Length: 567
Image (cartoon, rainbow, N blue to C red; front, side, top):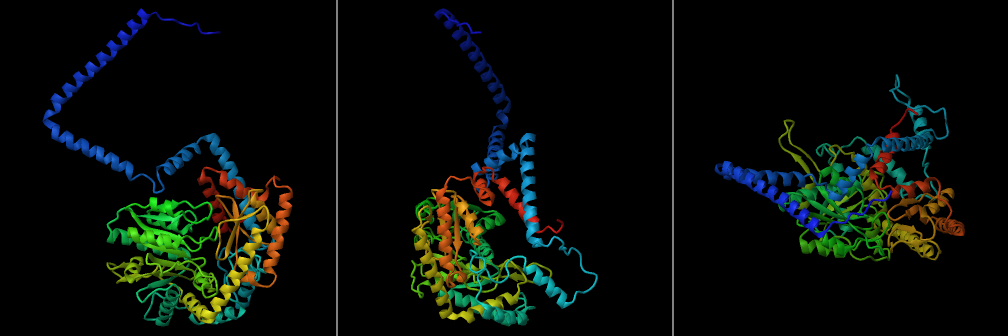
């Protein structure tokens, strides 16, 4: 049924307008009258009203400002929206059902890993009633270690395995046995271990062109080196510069350890976008994001995802201009880039040769070939290093101080790191670097000739990342996995990479890798629009989930499952 059209005469319109005008006029007059009454009664308290009102307004503004998340208002509002949405019964039931499916899949996969094909294997969940013999324990250890890596991967694994050969393994086994009970916390008891640490720091400082004032510490891993660097600059900023709300600037490709540090220390981290051609940090964007609260700028040499070197020289200049410390994260490739010039592959300056660089992190347990559990954090000056320390002078148990996050530290890890560096010497590291970089350059060149895939940026060190405009790149990941290769999945954008170590320099490994890539791409290009399935589909789907808390929850389920013994 249609609605009849109503027409008002000009007189009717005028009458209605006058009526509405009269109503609004009465409301305003009434409001003015109330205001006069209010003012007459409070005139004696006007100063109190002014001060109290201002205080309430200031408190309200402060209350809102301090509740702005470190990652910004938009991110906070987005999280709140998803949190409220996910509590709606209908949506919650869907999410719970999908999480249950994911948990079942994850549990099945981890159980398969832990059982290693033996359905009757048992998990040790209580102490044995009596001591086990050494032979029994060794049998158990051998069986556990056979569940995964068994000592040789044939060069098929991306990264993960950085070892210096059988001779070094035997030597370090003896050294570990000699130093297994040592602890750096007791310098007067184990001075030899502390002497080794001091010498490691001095040798590494020399590699990165540090002068007599440069200094550092041995840490347990790259993450700890980064955590300590961020702590040092947070404390330096608050103590020396009076910055109450510290911020750090990192590229979106920087290691997540910087995000972990920001979370632990409750400071703001600002992610600088990458140049989409070079896949290095956008230096112009970095300049614009500097504020008076910036206490640290980070450059990667190289960055883990795409293997590209940030423009450390430009970042150093920014740091000098704004008097902001610059940290170079060379955790991954530090023990390659330090030797590349001598190996015949010169790079742009990236270390203490640049006056704006104030600290560097480099892992000895990667390309330094030391056993897992050692990294180096260097500072340009002792004054900066002191801010990484923890010192407590009021404890009834005496003065307490520690150089790193840990209190007790295994002296054996420092001893085998020191041993490894002496074992290789300068010439040994240069030769290894030359072999790795030559292999990486050869692979990079050949990959660029393959139609259907693109090398991302200009990787100069040991990591090569690939993407595709023709097919889902994760299908290539799965195809290579079926051939025995273990590559790494990246995201934003969809891509994969392979990290070369000394294992890939063995005869025939690089050629096999290239042949398998060519064969896999040829198959994929014959049907580029084929449906993506399996793990490849999971990687692709995870990027499309706008509510990242769900992705985090699934990841947490995986981490929980790694501790499971009741399958």
